[in-house]
Amino acid sequence: MDYYSISCIYKLMNQFFHDCFGREFAIDQIVKEITEFLRADPARHYKIIIGSDSERLATNEADFVTAIVVYRVGAGGRYFWRRLKAGKFFNIRDRIIKEVLLSLDAAKELLTILEKESANRQIEAEWDFELHPDVCENDPSKALIQEVVGIIRANNFEAKTKPESYAASNVADRHVIPYID
Image 1 (cartoon, helix red, strand yellow):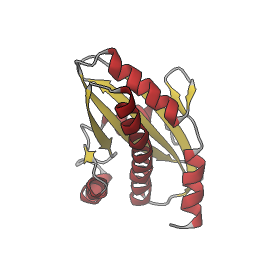
Image 2 (spheres, rainbow, N blue to C red; image 1 turned 90 degrees about the vertical axis):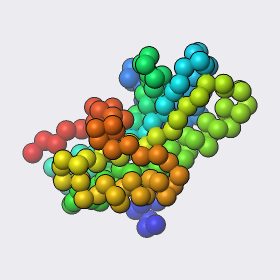
Image 3 (cartoon, rainbow, N blue to C red; image 1 turned 90 degrees about the horizontal axis):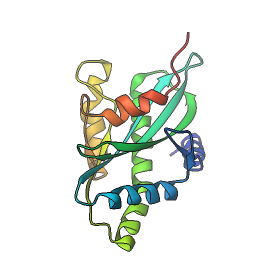
């Protein structure tokens, strides 16, 4: 990993997540919010999902947003998001791979704390953990599906692509700065 990548990850890991009301949360606070959400209705099934999206800006820099979604299946959910502006990206492949790496970093960080917290608080709710890459059979990212899903599976996570990848294509996408020429 080069200095630039380490620098971006360092900046990202020190950033706060935001909820839909604009409040800031550190990752350990998000875990507490998630565990409280799970404990509120332990009979339900939950999905904890992470997805990232990006947009190339006019300067060729990219705006990345990573979303953590906690979905109470059939009964709504919550989400948290954070932004990272990274250096110049000239092609879609590099941006999508960066999105996946940001999602993986967030997933590993969240899951490490969540598993400890879950054991300590004896959370009885069942939950699945998914990563949602922003790739689709019907757009230029089609050529990247196997590569991206392979990276995610190699890190022991389940991957869902569009149209099922709503954490990336709907939630994170909502907070990405749109391209203005």
